[in-house]
Amino acid sequence: MVRKAKTESPYAEWTNSLGYLVRKSFRSVSRALETRTSEYGVTAAQWHFLRVLWIEDGISQRELSQRVNMREPTTVIAVKRLEKADLITRKQSTEDARKINVYLTPKAKRLKAKLMPLVEEVNDLATQGMTAKEKSELRRLLSKVNQNLEAEDSRRNTPVPPP
Image (cartoon, rainbow, N blue to C red):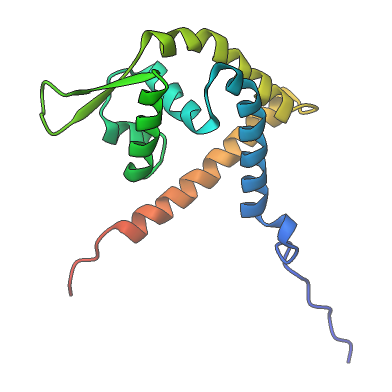
C-alpha cells in the first residue's frame, strides 16, 4: 500500500502567512513614508489623521477615530500630539457639547500640497515592476481581505440575544 504524502499548508512556513506579509508591507510602507514626511515634522501615525482631515475638516474625534480605524484612546493621544505640533485645533461642537471637533490649522492645510506627492512616490516605489492591472488587482484583493475581516469583526461584536 502506497501512502500519499500529506501536503503541507502554504501557511506552514511563517513567512507565507498573510498576516506576516501584510504587516511587513505595512511597516515598510510606513517607514518609507515617514522617511519622507519627517522632514516636515509629520510622523507616519499623524499622516493617517491628516489624510482624513484634508478630506473632511472639523469632524468629531470619534468620527476621526472610526475613519482611521483606530481605537479612541489611541486617537486621543494622536490628537494631542497633532495639537502640540500645531497641526490641529480642537473645539467643542456647537451642536452637541459632548463632542469635540478637530480642525486643521493653516500650517496643516499648507502641508497637503507638499505631502500628497510623497504618498504617491511611496506607492510607486512599493508597486515598482507591477503593471497597472496588477496594481489594481492588488488594491482589489487587499480591499476584499479587509471586507472579510471587518465582516468577521461585526459578527463577533454583535450581541447575541438571550435564548
